[in-house]
Image (cartoon, rainbow, N blue to C red; front, side, top):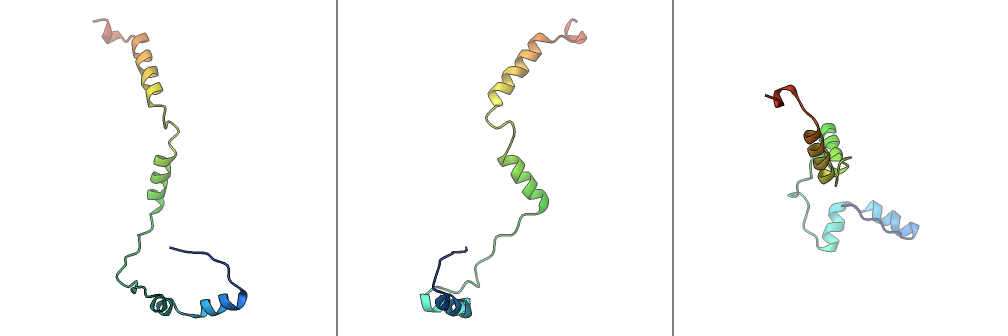
Amino acid sequence: MQVQREFRPEVAQRLESIPTEELEKLLGIQPTEGIKEIPKLSKWAKIAQDAHETSPLSGLSEHVLECSKEFRESSEFSHDRE
């Protein structure tokens, strides 16, 4: 997780110079060695996730079903006459 906060320039410079492990000790935070990072998604996984989240038919399933039903009812195929 990343946090942004504004400090006076001299304070920011001192904070940047302190290693993360030392800051964690000062704040009483357990070391982060045992924490696993979340793996980055592959190119195709990102595309699949984006397609799932931004589906062009999202919320239109009822309408699509109605259109399909109307099409089936108004269409006739040769094997339907037998």
